[in-house]
Every structure is written in C-alpha cells, then in structure tokens.
Image (tube, rainbow, N blue to C red):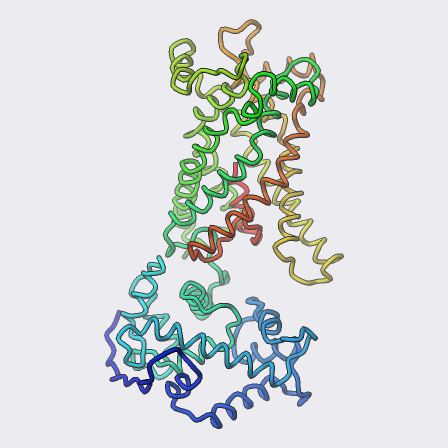
Length: 513
C-alpha cells in the first residue's frame, strides 16, 4: 500500500463518561443549530415533492441519486427502521430520531476503532479492527477501502467522513457489517457484477462457518435420529414394510435409546464431511477460474458451481463413506436387549471377514444421486420462489420464512426423485458379503427389488424420510442463526440459512450431497 502523507489528527472530544450527542457535536465541530440545518437539508433532498414526508419511492430515488445501487434494497430497510409508527411514511421527526441514533452508534464504533483516540482512524487501526473481527484483507484492499471513505485523500478517516459514508446504512454498525458494506461499494466501483461474495468469503476464517455448520448439523441430526433409524430399518426390509410394526421392533430391541442407535457416528462425520466439501469446493472454483481465464470466483457461473459443488460433494462423500457404512450396519444390526457390538469391533469384523473394499459398498449409487438431487432441488426452489413473489408477495422479496418453506419443499422433491438410489445404497451397505442370496452389485439390487417388490420397493421408508425434512431444515436454520449471532459471523449465503441467490443455491445443493 502506498504511503500517504498523514494529517495530524486532533480529537476535540475531551469529555469523559458515556457517549452523548454532545460528543458527536464536538467530533463534528458543529453546533446543535448547524446540525439541525444539515439534517433538515438531507430530509429535503429526499423530499423532492415537498410532501413533508418520505415514502419508499422517494427514499429509493434519493439513494440512487447518491449512487447507492438499488440492488442493495436498502431503501426498504431504511424506510422500516425510520418509520416508527409503521404507517409507510417517514416524517421529519422520525427521520431526525433515526439520525440521532445512527450518529451516536457510528461515533461509538468510531471511538472503538480509534484506539489512539486522536480523532481519526488510520489504515493500521482499521486493519487491526478487522483482524480482531476475524477478517483478513491485503494491503491493496485496505487502501481501496480507506480511499473510498477518505474524501479529502489525506490518508486517514475523520469522524465526519465516517459518518457521511455510513449515515444511511440502515443495519447495525458492527465492524463485520461495515466491512461487507465497504466490500460491496468497492466491488461496484471496479465494475463487478456480484456485489455480495458468494459462499465462504475469502476474508473470513472458514473455521467459524464450519463450527456453526457442524453445531447446526449435529443438532438437527440428533433431533431427527429416530426418523432416520426408522427409515433405514424400512429400507432394508424385502417383505412388506409397515411403520408401526417397525417402531415396535425398534422399541423391543433397545427401548427409547434404540431409536438413536448410530446417531453418534452420524454426528461425528458432520465436521470432517463439511470441511472436506468446502475446502474442495473453493479449490475447484479457483481451478475453474484459472482454466477459463476469469478474473474472480464470482465469474464461475451456475454450471461451474454445479460442477464444483457436485465434485466436492462426491469427494467428501467418498472420504467419509466408511463411517456411513458402519453407521448403517449398526442401525440394522439384529440383537436382543439393544446390545450391539462396539464401533471398533464392528469395523474390525468388516475388515477381517469382508475386506477393505466392503467399506465402500454402495458408494456408486450414493454418488450418482448428488448432481440430480441438486439440479431438481435448484429448479424447484427457483420456481417456488418466483411463484411466491408473484402470487403471495406481489413482487416483494421473500423473507427467511418464505425461503425456508421453498427450500423445504424443493428439498423434499429432490430427495423423492433420487430416493430409489438411496434405498439401493442402504441395502448394499447393510448386506454382509457372505450372507445368503447376497446382492452381486448395484444392478442386481435394482433388478431383484423390482422383480420382488415392484416400484413400491424403491420407496420404502420415504414417509419418515419426508418427515425429517421440515424439522431438520428448521432446526439447522435456527441453530445456525443463533450460533452465527454469538460468534458475530457475517451472514453466510447457505441453504441452512435459506438466504440465497441462484448461483449459491446451485453450489450449496451439490455441497449438501
């Protein structure tokens, strides 16, 4: 980063104690009357019709005049946060109240970043604040951010410059949110089409996302473990499969804990599977960018993301597949009183009696289902979202609950379409090689299942599988949100969060496998 001549900063705020409007006035070097005139002038700038109030159209027009891109949808957010009485309009008093609160908020975080308390933020102080928040950027990006805020180009950011840049930003002014706002503005300035970095941002420690995702995944799998056990038991039955007799058999074998058999291993594989998926996904996107001669990962496109996500899902699935097979063996082990072999004993028996290849029995049908599931899910999700915007929201943007509903339905549809592959996989996993009438491979499972059980045989256990979809998606969404807030992780575009765009859905659906 090129060195710039630094301006000697002088902090006019000498009053100790809690931050008040007096501190803000001193920092801005203006009187209360001058501030009132400034705020009134800004209100009039938006109120071009002299109506005495601001509505959505006026706010959107004003933000566009200030060169804030409309795709940020800050006009609606700004209207909501200013409109105290929720009448769809913002009068001057509501507007001024917002300005008072926002300037106090901005001054508090300005003071927190200005560790030397000299009345300005240096690039080094901004970099330190970002690092403390777990955000790593290089010198070039730091210089770009400082230049975007530093209007007089003296190499430091005064509170007046800080305020002018963030005054109309309607969300909470945390360092993470400010960083992403800076990132969006700078990306627009250099001509990028994607204003929000997709997937895991290269500047955020991926471990924080993986921890949040692992906690959410482990929680959802534990809550839906009884349904998963019931599904697997029904899938391997070659005679007529009925839910209530299967429930009674599970209870008879192991009581209440019998419904959670295999869940420990199911939870154990969440973290390594997620880590392998996202690491491989990011590497593959970089490779695609290199091969195509693109400038950034944002240019990969839907097909590229489907390929990268599908391949990453396949790699992760292959890496942890032995754990999945052992889990299925544990869930389908016939015993009395719930006594099953230990994980080590069962794994050793498979190795000794069936050989190492047995740990990958059923892998092919498992891999074959990844991309079709992602494509069906993506198409259904986008169609449902468009229908909800047209007929329910009347061209409004779908909120988290609507997106969650669309994701749940599309996920259920995708899972239903590839469910026969899941049945074949489970039957291959559960079967011991030396068992009577052992299957000779995937084609043999398809053939014998169809001959003996018909098409219905490929959908055994689908009812508890569908019951898993809603609670699993909802629990994952809620736990991820709470864990995300506690760790101050910026919003991740992820299917678990149900806040996504077309490109991200394509990649995440494949990543889910």
